[in-house]
Image (cartoon, rainbow, N blue to C red):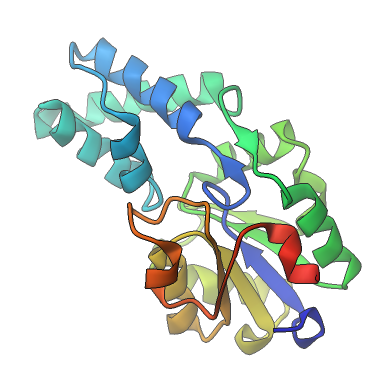
Length: 217
């Protein structure tokens, strides 16, 4: 897999660029406390993130013993809490800044493609100094459907003016692989991400790497 074979790359955010479990942990704990519910464990959060905020909130309510009828209240409280701490309890993974720079130097057009709400994604990228390398940032609310549906990848390729077969998807979970396969994009996973408690190798990517800057070697 050579960078010269690609014109663009779509890159996931949580678990791929930034370790955001700390942010999720704090925001969810505050949300559950507002509802009089106990906090959920970090391991549960790692298994659950990646399919959008709606899925995260519903799953967390169930895990904490809350009623589904509390969803709207939980959603509103979570949005407020997450916005207030976004990026404060997270860290950029080793090799990410260097990897992004090398992808740009290789001439690839880059878009961040995440299931996180777009406003939160842009806020986080700016807070971590990663926003300048991306031509676009698309979130889970940018299109009619989220990953693992291929639609976000198809639309992101269109926005970048790149054919799917020449656009590399870089992520951390089987959702990224399923979306990439459906869209016709080659796909690479990072080994350190949040693949729903499963090894990255089990997701069927074209390649699995330890650091993002490995792609340019």
